[in-house]
Image (tube, rainbow, N blue to C red; front, top):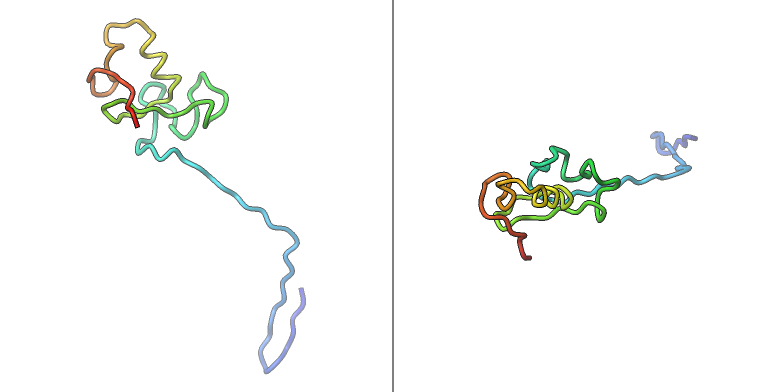
Length: 97
């Protein structure tokens, strides 16, 4: 770094040696966590290794979001209420976009 004096004012010259950028993403689901596994929707379910395409978010016709892995596990568990949304208990069907 060096300074120059001109017109009675000091000017500071700065040389940038490197620049690193950081990015982040979110599903924008509106909810913070999956109601089934209680993990963040931006992350992944306990059964998945990577967020994103490996563990997508799906919505029911009632607009509740879940990890695809979690809602499939819920539906296939064979319990009494597995044909209903885990949150509102309406009949479960995947939302068609």
